[in-house]
Length: 311
Image (tube, rainbow, N blue to C red; front, top):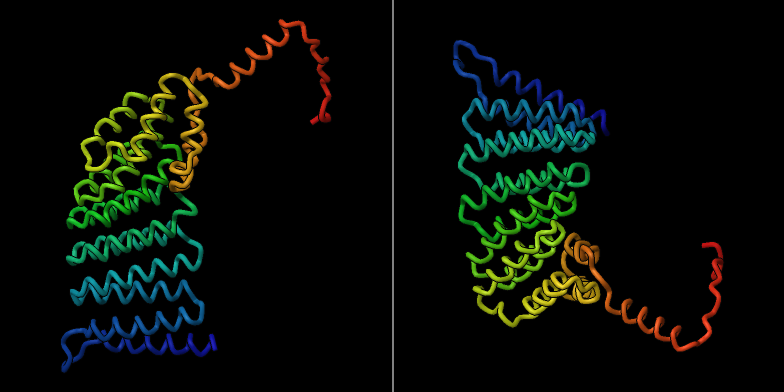
């Protein structure tokens, strides 16, 4: 089966070469037909799992579509060449081809297709290179933003924000979250603005910037419905506990369902939040009770260093 497909591919390439030849009766190469034959050859190679040869065929198809001034089809062929590199686990090269295709989509006046291709590229590279995925998602968001498609832009920025948190680029995450929140505000999706405010507070507190966290909450009171909402009450309580170095209050809010069931990257920020110099009132009260018990003359049990085993 594979050998048959490879033979078919070579037949299509031979036909393409004929399309490119000129003569006394045929003055111009037939780029359109040549591109079509290379496209067929590429599919044959792909079906035979000859991905390197398929890639070369797709690039030839793109070359002749470009000669024929059909940039959209050229970009599609280059994107397919990228997918052939992906099949060979050559992800950096795959992404390079997809990015090149996106530039051609933009040149052709089809930015939506460019943005969707960048999004796909981000998903491909995300398991291997989070920083590159962030770059691709932000580029895709920028394309959608230029087209006034703010919902799609905000969703892609959201992907970038979460990855920035994951790689601990918290300063960049704070900037991306603010931009994302502004977009949701512009399209009047206020519940998402509330969620982004909570994410901002967590990021700023991990940056040890209480002032910035507090400012995010204060600014959000201008959003319809935020005042008195579950989100605002939780953030006020969290900020109060953080400011008063009350570990118990911070722990209670950070482990509440509102924060624990956020996107995983933000939930991890919540449960890992610590208060610098914080004190647990429960532990202080327990220590005070123990001290009072000792002072009343109750015999204290001798501690066993190995109680419960060596572990």
